[in-house]
Each structure stands twice: as structure tokens, then as C-alpha cells.
Length: 71
Image (tube, rainbow, N blue to C red):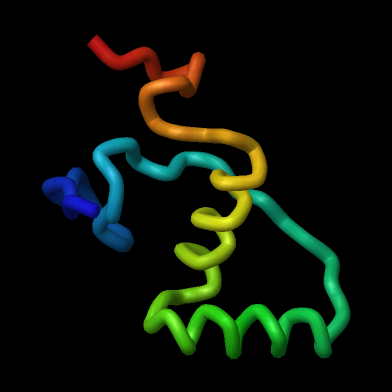
């Protein structure tokens, strides 16, 4: 993934599209631990790992995102 130029305070984006929304999940500690271990194995943070798997399950790609049409 290409890292976009910083646009202000906060973490730099890993995608061309800046993250502006939150997804809150209530999960058990055991499930969270499993997610953290799985992300660590891939040398990713839980957020990046989760987005990868959620995007794949939803069939999401930046080019088919209706809220961010590509030229």
C-alpha cells in the first residue's frame, strides 16, 4: 500500500483515502486476543488486519466504493 501525504495531526494514512469513521465492536477478550495474535503474525496492527479481512468479505475495493468514486 502506498502511504499518502499527511494532511494534519494524527496518524498518517496507509491508503489514498483518509479514514474518517469508526467501527466499534464488542467482543470477548479471547476473541480480541486471537485477533491480536493473527495480526501480529502478519506484522500488522489489529485495525489494518481487520480492514483487510472485512474488505475481502464485503468485496470492497477503493474503486467500487460509491462514497469515493475514482476518476
